[in-house]
Length: 476
Ligand code: ADP
Image 1 (cartoon, rainbow, N blue to C red):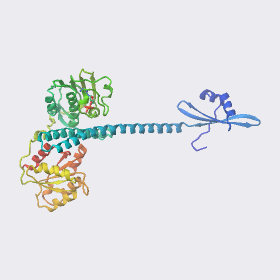
Image 2 (cartoon, protein in one colour):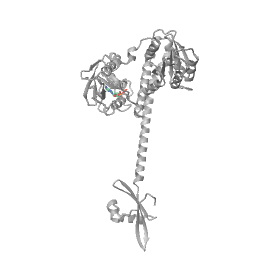
Image 3 (cartoon, rainbow, N blue to C red):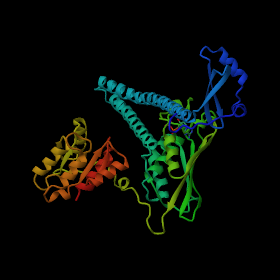
Image 4 (cartoon, rainbow, N blue to C red):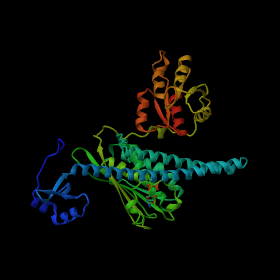
């Protein structure tokens, strides 16, 4: 007997009462069995028992000896293993479904990009044809980029990596900006967006502007996408009340008179990659991830998203979020500087010199081409170490700006920036260093600042944002 085992004697009446042991049946089984043993299992309350019975002769009499093992722990372990196995199988299926959805969603725009590139090459001398191909390549690349962003957002949500970065914001500004972001889409479909802010009494709050805007842009842009030309869309902001700790619940209600959603699809609407299959949605590009992400973000803001809709009857999406009010006069919800500073084209920066630190030659070529147009002299360093050496060996004030990739062989961009800032010379404290990186999350932006960089530009490069940065650092 093992240390943790106890010997317990059961009476025959116990066995009959609690375990429904029928000795007549057991006797019959024992006589039948060649080795004169018989085993069976019983559950009692939440415990599991294993009974092994033996037929033995004792003092000329046949007797039954029954040994009972408490197998509860073993069963619990087995149950756990079974659940783990089921979960692993489920995760595996989910992964396969996810990968095949991803593969399909990536291949579709890639097919357009490659196909249109081939067509453009065939018609190099027909300008309108080439221009049409480039427009289509542009649309598909943007879709692909959006898909990558959404998949990464999903992964970050699943791994609990997404965090809210709250700053003082003005809800009225957020709504105004939503209109600016979406107005081209509205004009194209000749739709009317009515904004009703009459229920907004406390406009100055703390919120993660980028994420709140993402949720609202997603829902209003869905309303635009799934509503016909000349359709009507309404965005209403209401308050559901404030608590003693200075938090208010806000309701953003987006109503459209578009295609509506069938009652079969409604329960699946917030699931990843789910898109309704019908004649309207089939013609519209989408990933089926936007609402999943939006709902999770609303949940992070102690709120939720709900939807009411019927096929052909339009839809009403309601976003509720809880936000902390700003104290009186402690801020005014700052405007995005980038939006205000955006330029159409860069002025002439002849005489200025920029060091581009980038290990990928094609990426270097792209950025050099964009900034070269503005008359800037561009120099190239293929990794962080070469960049540090170039700055160290140049005259004071030689470079006016450095664009720094982050992931590079030999020395990464963070280390290179720190080393440049630590060089023993006058100008290195002031040279603007701009991170240009495919790592575009707020944690990455924070890391760039910690490493001593002044700005963080995400790849693929947004040309207007690049021009804004040039303007900020090259005009004195
Ligand atoms: P996407 O629009 O990229 O497909 P979403 O997660 O934003 O992904 O939406 C999921 C699906 O929900 C859409 O494909 C569409 O079928 C449906 N849907 C969302 N919003 C609306 C709306 N306003 N009207 C009709 N259907 C909608």
